[in-house]
Amino acid sequence: MPLNRLLIAVIVGPERLLWRVGGQAPQVWWRDDDARWPTLAFERLLDLSTRRAAPLTVAAVPDGDLAALAEACRATPGVELAIHGFRHQNRAAPGAPSGEVNDQDRLEDVVSELGAAVSAFARAGTPATLFVPPWNSVHPTLSSALVVHGLALSGYGQARNASAAPPRLDAHLDVMRWKPRPRFRGAIRFLLRLRRLLAQRRRARAWDEPIGLLTHHLDHDPAAWAFLEDFLTVFRPVASGDLR
Ligand SMILES: [Zn+2]
Image (cartoon, rainbow, N blue to C red; front, side, top):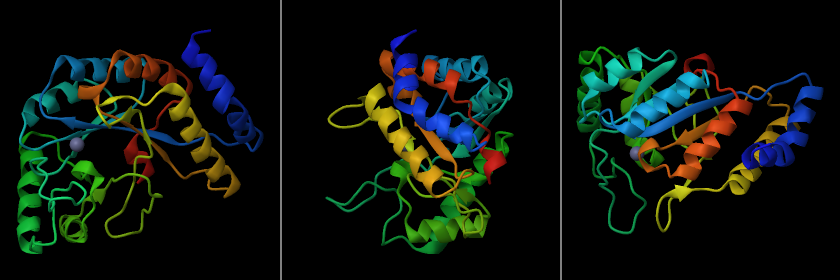
């Protein structure tokens, strides 16, 4: 058995068994961030999604070639595009966490920026219903603008809330580590976090509470790609549209 499959079996196997005993299966969905135009890494991502029959939500920055991305996604069953910010520009004050919307921004300006992004996706023939803020930075002004445009929100680490304004469906499980440089998180770290997320849901009997897998195709090293191959064989994602 390949090492990754063995680690999956050893680290999360017992927890998966407890789910099966309860007659339940975890709801995993898959979000990938930072697409701007088709690249070799993007082709590899879509190929992985196809081979594993794994539905995928690709968060794309509106200033890229949305038409080309939309065309590639249309040719791949189960892949949808979400809006990833306006220009993926860090406009936070020095020393503050990165984010594109800040305290100085007026709601009407953010509503207008968001309107331009929505229109760009519609023009590319891929109307978007989900917004993924860069750096998962959810500023209250951005939330209000999402409500104005009727968009759902995907950040990081929070529970699903379909009745919130805006409705929220987060990612929880990042395949990467970012500091001091992007690299695979490591199978053991990743699987220990997954085990914790699964155990929390089981103990709370929150069987339907989704777990969002987060990837960044442009930053994957060979170890990250190899791990995803095995992970997606064992955990079959569902489409984000089925969860919101
Ligand atoms: Zn991003």
